[in-house]
Length: 454
Ligand code: PLP
Image (cartoon, rainbow, N blue to C red):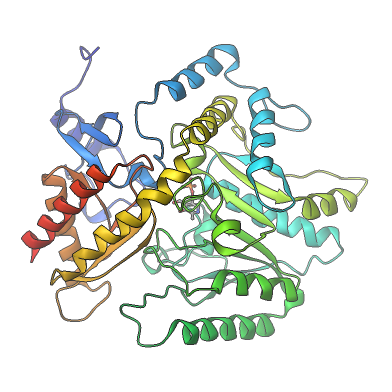
């Protein structure tokens, strides 16, 4: 029923007048420049004028199974009819949350068998840090609360998670938690543009981490939080062996390892959890969100090892044995029912297998764009990738390079393709169901936009 549809221009005007977007361009607040998306199906979205775009952003890394999946809509509707909500606090729960926790424990690596549901990725990261603090406090070591993170990391939009994040542009105007959050260097390694070998870079990163642990004192550090591949910070892949080597360092110093798989999990790298299969990790905690529901509902979770949950429980003070963490909508029944249906579809259609098949093709095709003169480098892994633009002068996020990427983004949009501009990068994270034909279309449109911007 399109009868109550508003036209695109009036929606754009209302948006300009009333909405403050996440990561809005404040200098353009009130100016009508938005795109109002009204409909979607498969890997395509339509704006309120009915113009169609191939969605190579995948919503926001989260749209994995594609838009308009009847089975997911049905799961949501059915749960809403049966029981839309009940509190998850204390010892009450809902059937979908219980069933989903069981499924996640089955999918997760190692002795990860306990699930703390949240409302999204940021709240899950906050909860994981708090869990790490509980763990050491429970052992009578409350001073072991410092956190190691990395430059260019992205762990969320709340105050603590932004403190953990290390994207330079997001670090102005705030009073971050500098007294217990410490940033190591960005671990991204791109062999095409690096002047040193991967082995040398790995050695530098590990030496730095070891030195930072010594400076702060291992006895003061609770955890290290890391995306296996840094996503929003610019699709930064560490040198081979980095993830496992940093885990070993953490083990050596009794520092918990939190793997933030909000982007890399649920199929984007071809596995439900890339930590174990791709990087040889047995993390103490894994963060998941986004693809957990294929973006159909907001939901996040901290997946916790038995070692941690057992220790927290065994050492809980008898007078106040409460895990004081959680949210009204933690593990919302409708969101959990959606996640269950999502996992069932992913298994039935072998979505991870599909990603392992088309992922390398996607990266190969994109890498052919390195021939273009305004492309500095193309990097990625399976269905997460980025194209880095430059004017041929200084590389990196200079004003001119950023303006160039904005133009490429705009030309893509005009030609019916949505990519995500960030600094001087065009980031791509298409839905996991993307076909080879649509990959060819993405590369063709992006290639033409790069030519046009040259
Ligand atoms: N962690 C990572 C790696 C992310 O990429 C994001 C979001 O992009 C988050 C955490 C935060 O998740 P949310 O936006 O659902 O709070």
